[in-house]
Length: 401
Image (cartoon, rainbow, N blue to C red; front, top):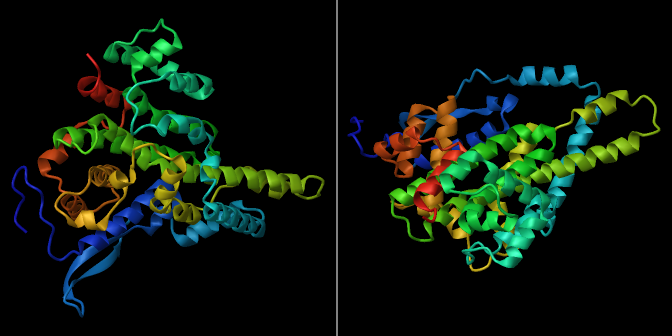
């Protein structure tokens, strides 16, 4: 393969099947979200000169060895050494999986396991048509204690005041009007994530932190791409909320796991009350967590969950699915949708930056979604993780002067 010319999109080597590599990277991303012992499942496809019966290039599956990986035998030994009652733990795993599957099959009350989403439904339902605060919206925000508290914390931040010209001494209504509806929508996903993190089951905080990190990268990237590429399918300031909506299914799924873990633990603790010789079982309950393979299976449901959640939300004059649903048909076109491109860059930033992606896989990923080397270098130089940098983006391009 010839060297890439400056500013051009790298070429994919002929010996690799693009879709196979992309599917593996997506699977690897879910493993990255889980972390720990389950990172032993990382593999990479390496091109071969041989072809299959259909004339396609063969690809060999090889292990990606990481410093953090744990062997299957070591993982099993660790489990047996710390778990005083393995059979009871296995029973809990089965019961929790059954509860989660039953909840997913019901579908009609998924939002109820995420009270933060229920609290903000009146706010986000009108995203497609609202441009300013009205009296009902202001009253609702003021009535939701955690939401009004976080709005005040945002406005009281001296850096935000300097960037946006906000005043610290004003009524709550004046604060919201100064902030403006578009900026409030920019902040809503971050505020929801913070609130979920405050009460999520401790065993899920690690995964939630990575999901929030991923959301910030997608959010910063999608706005930058919209500005660079002259995106005009929706208002440019609304592209940022696409990132928040795109990780909504992951947030709800993690909230679902947390809800069912707490319900199961409470149920079991009540059942153990009055029984003798239950010290070991109480110890297991106090340190219980959803097994990694089951957690991976759960968060892989995000694409299937998107239409169900958005239907439950009931958006007014706005269909986010056409903007944030992955599509193999779109991927084969020369112009992937904006969300897919931002998501691909987030994969690169999190997997390649932590040694979880090989060079040829990086080349395939970036080429598939139309990244030139110039664009890649521009994004790499940006602080896409800090929310303050997102506020700076808003202040520079969208704030009213």
